[in-house]
Image (cartoon, rainbow, N blue to C red; front, side):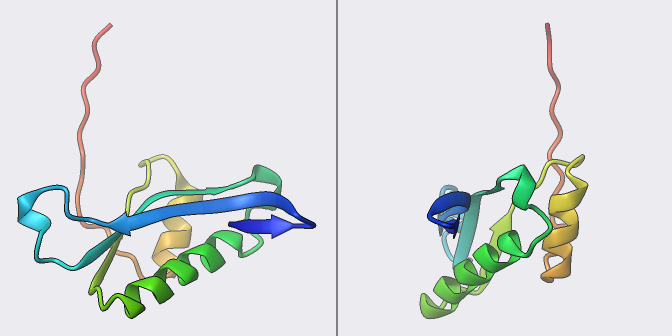
Length: 97
């Protein structure tokens, strides 16, 4: 969790990624959620939180970190790219009314 004067301004949820049998041997850590309060974005908080996850990844001897981003979330995509993440997969959705 990231704080400013004891006020929560960001958090990150993560854990091992092994939901599907195809991923069981990939030694992957998954960032399930990364959130920074809007007024605190672009101040390095998200980057710091992801670097803390990377420290855990290294200690656990995991080889891969995975994170998802909505295609329209340019800020998140820019942050993740700046930390070395690469586009890996595309998910498609169809909605009905």
